Length: 74
Image (cartoon, rainbow, N blue to C red; front, top):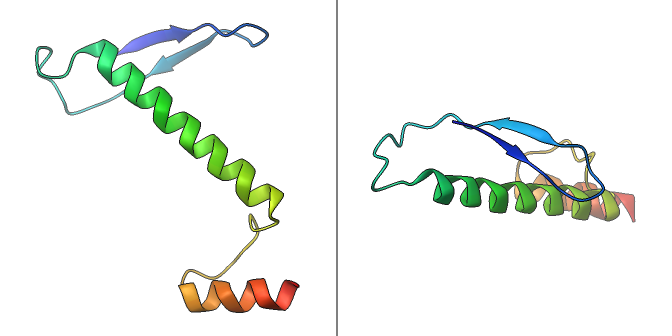
């Protein structure tokens, strides 16, 4: 599915959304576009939060390792 996003003050973007949800009745295109927009906002907000808290450069994958990195950076 291809569609365009128009936001005031931003460039128009063309989005290509690939999905395995092929039933048009059960999964209408408008609902998939809305769901993708929500996901995009969540990803953007998480990235902003991690950058603000200087946690965007953490190397560890485990909770214990991340806690050690955070405590070491204080």
